[in-house]
Amino acid sequence: MEPMAMSEAIVLAGSAIGAGLAMIAGIGPGIGEGYAVGKACEAIARQPEASGAVTRTMFVGCAVAESTGIYGLIIALLLIFLKPFT
Amino acid sequence: MAIPKVLRGPEKLEVSGPKVIKTFHLFGMKINFTETVILEWIVMAVILLTAFLLTRNLKVRGTSKRQAIAEMAVEAITGLVRDTMGRRWLWFTPYIATVFCFSIFGSLISLFGVRSVTSDFSVLLTWAAITFVLITATKIRCGGVKGYLKGFGDPIPVMLPINVLSEISTPTAMALRHFGNIAGGSIIMGLIYYGLANLSHMIRLQVPLLTVGIPAALSLYFDLFSDFMQAFIFIMLTMVFISNAGPSEDAA
Image (cartoon, rainbow over all chains, first blue to last red; front, side):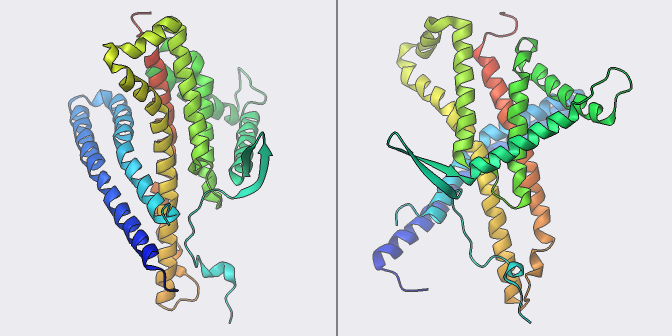
């Protein structure tokens, strides 16, 4: 690899650290989805005949809860692969 | 013995947008003709051909296997729309089914080694914009223009900026969710292939044998499961938002 200018190196390092920090956003959806799935399991245990509706609602709820994590992922991917600041 | 380049596996990890094939200049705007457009036409042709082949020679008695498959698909999607949106919105079924098919075929086209259509953000933004138009049209149809505008000042007029923001964020979030899942999944799969190829070069294998089989388990999740899931979630959210835009079942 050819040596790069100091300024460029600092920007790259900052982008990499920023990408790592952006992925902290993954914590929220993890906790939230785990909670939702746990509750869905309880609901299915209580009323097994409603499992279809419960599962469907749970998946949609999980997808909505996941969006913040996805935003973090998109920011991280942008920073790593597109390098918008270099 | 020299190993052909095709068998040597990925040497460089490349992540980029869809390839631009031709650029048009129209009214001072730059319009890119990308590979996504071509793949979309292929997907459309496949869907049309499948629909055509499945629905030829429909009979009431002595149904063929083909017809049974077609009926099963139509009944499944109709039942889903009826359960989620209610009987009044049953006429939305063709649109919902179209988006579902397009999303699934567009994502699964990546199994043939090309970019999936849904990892291009403009495609998802277009679908989300259609949903936004449908939501707004439903609101205006059910409450009139006055009622629609009044909805922004609900429950108190101070909430106006927040209501406008939530109106805009609905389609944006839908598009970003679908795009993030598919594009993120394909990038992760690319990383896995690249990493396994490097690993097998490291243990002095001429051909990256480690990339055989191992990624299949992950591909099952990132390519098959998440494609179906995202298509399902996209149509579910479309249905929920549209049916919420109108009055509730008992009010009508």
